[in-house]
Length: 117
Length: 114
Image 1: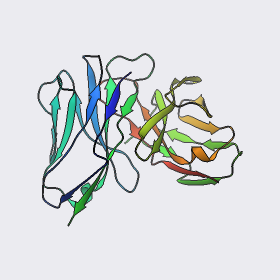
Image 2: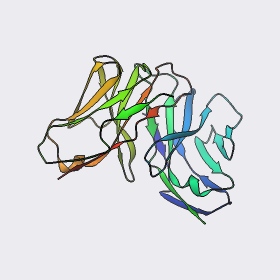
Image 3: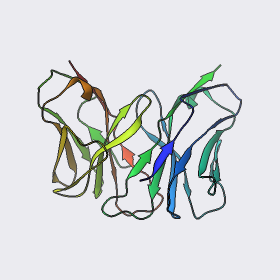
Image 4: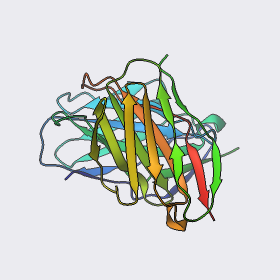
């Protein structure tokens, strides 16, 4: 079974600075997808960024980018120019390309990000 | 936009009560999921459904059951609530098309069992 590990329960960063959240995963599969979700105090889970394992190029969405290291099974999230609105719980998630029935997401433990003004 | 609606934002129930958590999605999605969220444990899958009346156990199904009589509605049932089921419950759906598409989530139900 696949597992996802986020080793940083909490992180903090000064507003306008850059922060990197870590995520590692364990799988024997070669085709899969990786996601970062954000959960602000409103509790609504928001998809921040996604990465297809077959793509070597790291995904980027505005201030958010990933460092995807397939061989190391590492998928970190970099937030540049941090803003107060980035404060949230962040979850890393894995999804297999091949699943019978429904394709389930496997989540990490989460990292709570605090932005200091 | 796809919308996933959970009927209650907060619930307080007594030990031993039968509890129903309701989830409705409005985009004809095939798959629906129930997760439980606890601090330090992340989101853990309780049950999921890939079609009407079809269900499969997730990683922590003990103490729970589900019902999917209509495509748009997926209910989580706590047959006899216990204090260790105090948690945040998140419902999600997806189209079933696979690919790099994540879920659409509801905004969660925070359940307290006293």
